[in-house]
Length: 69
Image (cartoon, rainbow, N blue to C red; front, side, top):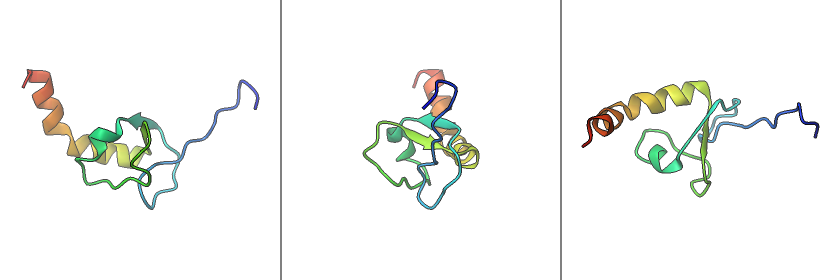
């Protein structure tokens, strides 16, 4: 594999085969409406659509974290 080639990651949400754009902690994904293919991985790769869902599902938690609760 050449240095300029990137390895394409696939979204880790069950039933999705789109290209992943972001990766997040799998511990944070467990508390959302998303179901992962492999729950034992070190990071959860999400496509654009599932990342948007993840952000909506964790909005309240992120707000509380920023306030220090």
